[in-house]
Image 1 (cartoon, rainbow, N blue to C red):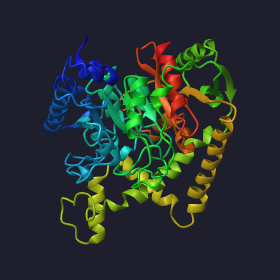
Image 2: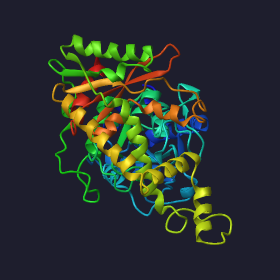
Image 3: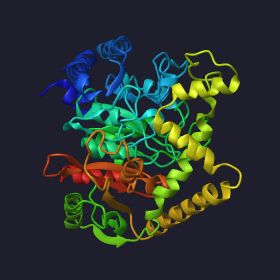
Image 4: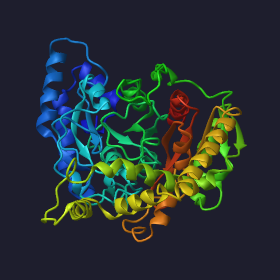
Length: 478
């Protein structure tokens, strides 16, 4: 057996129940990995060693007493620093919230605490989840575990890098336009973007309320199913969580794919997608075809408009959601002594928000303003409806769709910092899924010639995460 922190959730849980090692042992190995690697990777921005140790010791006492424990009990976990954690700093990696300690837990944290999770700390992200590279953080960028000169992806880059570097067994993230799938692809692990409303957003700082989803990163498909089982479901504090039954996600493991219809969106393999990435994805598709799946091309013609829809809709919702951070109701007061209220607002937000946030707030406020609302925001919402309908039509013909996560491999730190539009195009293949509100699972698909990870995404109809798990598990085992 290697170091304990290299285990999957299922293997670690089995070892705990068989008393081969303790939760404290697991935690110590993870903390040692953080100590050794976090200085260069910058995956964690807060480590709660004391709180984690208390929970781990409590779980060990339960096991010693012969109590039944859940699969997630005693397993070290990292949490994206956008998700409220009672008594543990939650900054959104923004100067305006750098000292904020929430008085309550997000619903997703409550659910995991009920399973005796060991929360090891909070992970780095692009400020308020705005970015695709985890470079827009007041704590500095997260680096890719495969190449420290490259990005880990964003906005949940810290969460992805932490899992790959074995700093914990799984992490929570958010996905608004690819913020779980892109880092999972760039860091070579599994990342679940759920159906909109499948997991409660209560207690998670909102970026764009009609797009945000809460998901997770793991080292295996089985672990994806285990964590999803614990966090999915209706929540009275989030009215966007419908009363749709949560299936047994582990029941989708070990199934074959014979007779499944697999769609390949032709737009996901077109211009701009690197040859090596296409070949890696198609090699995985060939495995499914050989096993009896029926593979066919599908058409999602509005894919080319998705980035434009996103960068009108997202800034508009972000502008409305961040309005409350004014230094009076929420956020830090300005360091200087402003002369009047307007000066107070300008100074508080000028000091408190980074460049990317300011850029998006200005765009969002503009597209919501009188005379421009119909021309931009309303039109974007109409195009979004077209995208929703195209996905629905495609799923009448196929069970799942498969395509690359990113058209390019992990890029160099700083490469697109002066060219926001080039950075935005890295999300061209992930954004349509968010626009449609459907689930997608990022899965490792191999590496390029430079040894950098390539990821594919398995996309399913709304609330059919089980199909993503079924196909991913088959690929993992074959």
